[in-house]
Image (cartoon, rainbow, N blue to C red):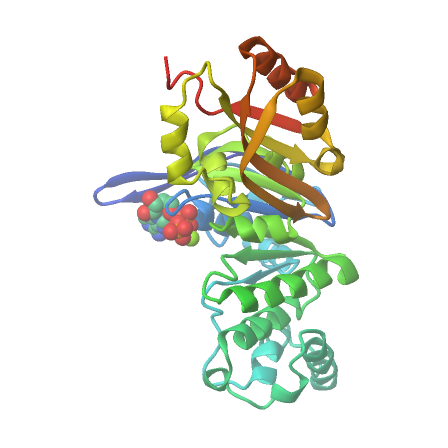
Length: 346
Ligand SMILES: Nc1ncnc2c1ncn2[C@@H]1O[C@H](COP(=O)(O)OP(=O)(O)OP(=O)(O)O)[C@@H](O)[C@H]1O
Ligand SMILES: [Mg+2]
C-alpha cells in the first residue's frame, strides 16, 4: 500500500547541510498498524512529513497504491494527499473554531455540501466519543479530548491512511491508552492503515503489528513486533525494549553477578515467548541436570495476546551440567538465554 524506496532527506541551511535520514526502505501493507520508533533527533518527524510530501524528499520514492507521489504535479498531489489524514502531538486545532467546526474544516476546503458536512461531523464525533462537545472550543477540552477532535478531523475526508506523529506524547498514560484504543478501533472497523511514529515502545507494544527502528537517520531493524520484542538485534532496539519489558537487571543482581564464582553457578537471563512461557521448562531443567535454580527476578507480560516472560536465575550444580542445562534451555523454541556473569569473571 505504501512503498518507500531509498528515501533520503537533507536540509540545506546557511550553516551547511543536515542529513535527516537516508536509505529508508519500508513496505507498509493495507490494514497494518505500522510503528516507527526512534530516539529524539532520529529523523522521525522529517520522515513522516516526507511521506505526504509536506516536505520534499531529497531522493527516493513514496508510492501509495501504485502512485509515485514524488513525481506528481502539484494539483494531483493535493488530491492524493487527501487520502492521508494526519494527527499531531500538539493536536493543532483551530482555537477560534468549535469542535464541530474544526472537524468540518477539511470538508469546507473541499467545498462539500453543508448538509453533508453536518451529517459527517455528527458521525465522526460519535465515532470518537465527543457528541456532547460539538459546540465547545478546544480550550474547554482536556488533552485527550483535543486529540479525539484531531482524529475526527483527520478522518473527515475518508482517508486510506492515517499518519500519526507522536500523537500520544503529550498525554498521561491512561489517556494514551484510550487514544490508542480509539486508533485500534479505527483500524479494525474502518480498515484504515495506520503509520505512527513514536519514541515510546509502550505505544508500539500496545497497537502495532510491525515496527521499524530509526536511529541517526537510518532504519537499524524492522519486522513483526512480537519477533522484535522476543529477539532484538540492535542495541538501540534493545534499549527501547528493556524499558518496557522491565528486563533490566536490578543493580544488586548485577553486582552479585560480578561477585559470583563461575564454578559456583551461572546467572542467566531467560526470555520466553508464546507457548514456551506456559511450559514447565525450568522444572525439567532442574530434574534432568540435577541443578538448583534460584529465581532472582521474574516478569511476565503480554504483547498482542502473546505471553512474554523474563526470568533471572542463578543455576548451581556441577559445572558441566550447568553448561549442558543452558544448552538445553537455549534449544527450546521460543526461549532465549543470556549468561550474565560469564566473561565478567574471567
Ligand atoms: N526544517 C528543518 N530544517 C533543518 N533541519 C531540520 C529541520 N527539521 C528537522 N531538522 C533536523 O533533522 C534531524 C531530524 O529531526 P526530526 O525532527 O525529524 O527528528 P525526530 O526524530 O522527529 O525528533 P523528536 O523525537 O525530538 O521529535 C535533526 O537533526 C533536526 O535538527
Ligand atoms: Mg519529531
